[in-house]
Image (cartoon, rainbow over all chains, first blue to last red; front, side):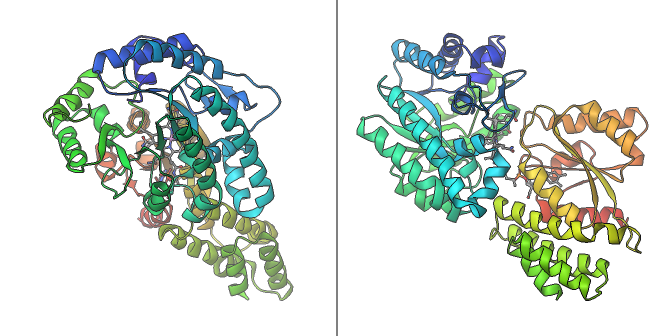
Length: 289
Length: 209
Ligand code: B12
């Protein structure tokens, strides 16, 4: 369901065009939705929207890349994201989610990723200040999004246990995520948390957040929260029906799972592969597609 | 003595590492021994802690800073010594891929194990790898990719080396989350390893023939 890059590829648009133009972003997301008919859409172009609005230099060609920590100039693409969200909310009859970055990941972008990973251990005051700046921004961004009546997906890749320890997760990322989750829920919107890589060491904390959905790679991990995922990005790219089937089966053996690819659908994925995944899933009856 | 250097590295304390190295130097300890029994031994322990998931990326980055802080103090002294330089490694992340945390972790561990690493950075085009092999004449070319969409470049780099009759001059090892033994064999790489600590062992094995 994370489909903007793939949609851009199918429609022959560049990632830059899609990342800086809300209308085109909505167009590719709607296109994918009509092609595959899944049950929710996500407004997401790249991970750097907020960081760029806060002054990080970002290059959009040939694909979006963060060039460094926050400097003076900012380029604000949030109005485009909001524009896309509005269009999709109007046109589609499935829940629309909008991606926001987890404050820990955003703080890392602002400070420079490796620099930030060091200062969380060594210079805690400075690290906390970056967290506060990120948090303040995200609270107002969230406010703007929630007023549209959309749902929220918080992506926090750098808070993954592939990168930081569960202790650091608890110390920095957890409370910030909790605040965003609570705020979203008070507005009556759905909230999903997306963290790739290893989350086993923090699964208990993730459950505690009380989000509606956890989008994670390890679909067999025991959680109380509804999980989303199941089919790996390399599986969907290669398209071997047997492998797709075995991953779909594993995912759907668990009761509380929404089937999805684990992360962005790789741009060049043949549409057939996605249809194969959906067809296999549909054999399970009235399960989320 | 060596233990306090080792501990300082493990405790991510660059000041204490420098201090301990200075004390050792004052007591006329052989700089090569300071390096091997103190600093490198410390980083080996760090690699173990990382492999056991007691240390994560931030801890390893800080330990490596402490390591380099100590190493800077003895670098010059070691140059003229009997210590043989380790193998030379050219290392980069393939084009289209900006994930470089893993590469940086592996690099730190290789350098701490005494290898010379030429870092090409991330998002490196196929031909840049080939040119770097030509220019640097490394013993080993190490390639990282974190995405299924970009890992195919690894095969392209190896083919390009073959085309230019350079394939036999260098051993190629690859790694990154989506890479595995099977993929490594399919692109005819000489080796694969799943993480930093095992990459060090892999290279030891390759270098010793
Ligand atoms: C952190 C992260 C990011 C950070 C990267 C910061 C940075 N400067 O590196 C940010 C947020 C910027 C990011 C961006 C993106 N990411 Co990302 N990211 C991750 C995440 C969560 C962890 C990666 C990491 O740093 N791990 C920690 C390090 C220490 O581990 P490692 O890299 O695996 O390295 C170890 C081993 O693999 C090995 N190793 C690595 N290289 C080598 C080389 C050799 C020679 C050897 C021997 C060993 C070796 O040793 C290392 C140390 O032990 C992974 C999830 C995952 N499952 O890995 C996704 C992941 C890699 N990202 C993914 C994606 C899709 C993206 C984006 C495209 C998202 C988007 N739509 O914009 C962009 C990428 C843009 C681009 N073109 O590259 C996908 C890739 C999917 C695919 N197609 O295969 C992943 C797998 C998530 C997922 N589940 O789908 N990401």
